[in-house]
Length: 572
Image 1 (spheres, rainbow, N blue to C red):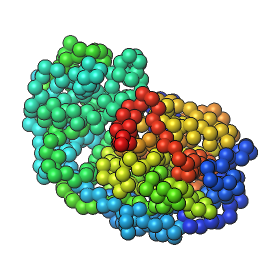
Image 2 (spheres, rainbow, N blue to C red):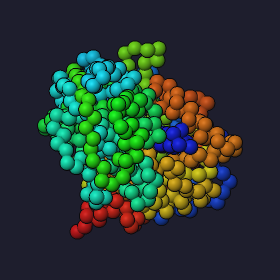
Image 3 (tube, helix red, strand yellow):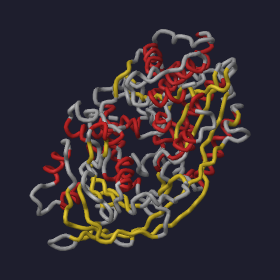
């Protein structure tokens, strides 16, 4: 989760059978401030809870992270040797703890994926009235296709600026009104109009809606019958620099296998830099800035740009099975009801050239995956299982679009109407204990009430994410569960680093985004201060135990967009 805070603050301001005795100097008790004893969860004494929490170990946790992020694991890409090592490692650790498989007799849920590795057949050619020009792949444009075909192309496809590319009847908004997009390529602004206007009456104001996500924009372009779709990259609006685009959307791109091989998607999807998009408007009465301002107002109509693009891709297609890893502690009284801890085990793998070829993914997300194992230690140290079952779920292909969690949520081993709640861990705090806890999607569910109680016992407080306009709530695996109505908490250590000067956390975040996020530099660092990581895991433990050993079903707060799905799922 440090990833979310680091991205936010860098672009706007930062972002288990063993019952071992606590390890003096590196355990949770040593890391926690001298505050009141945490309240006991229902059915367990204060001493039993404290003893289980005391088994959380910085040293063991660091070993998990270092192993998962090692060069040997090769960046943990699906379909790779690194995947095999990761799945075996997780299963072995759960077996050592005496925690059984979560999918019948198996620790794995197979997820059928297709990997497409696109090779551009040259650069993208722009046909303009004042002469053709080329766009360099990687530096100026990155393209791919979701269609499972060997070859795909655009041939002089007319560019049409469609504003934010949104069709939202509930907001009275249609950026495609009055145009036939057949054979044309949509040019689309990232984020949504509320971000541009900062007007609470426009969409959700500065807080991004799902309409602002690039995933939605490609989906809508396909529904409109477009041949291609190009999203304009702006660092502030996107929430990350161009290097994240060029690093994340090149190399193998994964998707869940479908019967129609994604024939319903546009032929070419991609991103262009802001400078490229500005050039698209050269010679027109309105430049990109002026027309973007107009596109943020109701009633905008699409604008044909009078230029075309041609490009082609050749795909190497590989079909195979990846897997989610599931381990389960059966509940002592209501085993059919589940609390789920989740984290994605995958990262970007390795490239074939360069001095450092491995995208180790230490923070993102060896830290979250290791937290699953460490929390499993703590729950295994309890004198009995909680009343409800605990599911530890390590999902695949998050980096390819939340594919593993989406597959599980749509094909749950344990029905969503028996999944009480969950916690998602996507990159953990590695820069020391914090006085605050950032809640992504603040004001979403009653899980925040439990988190606030646990945080108060540590002398900490909850704060909203600093940049809700970045849409981080839609960028990690909890979103797959939320769409099915299951309340899932997504929270992280904050920016107020204990015993550090103001601004220390923000500077660390900026450094991470600039030098390590989705880059080979995201490597394990023995100098990390992981005592804050353990404090955060203590909070997750207490929230989960309160739910798993209780009788209540945490609810979405009134007015939340996912409450209707939950109510329908739980209806008799």
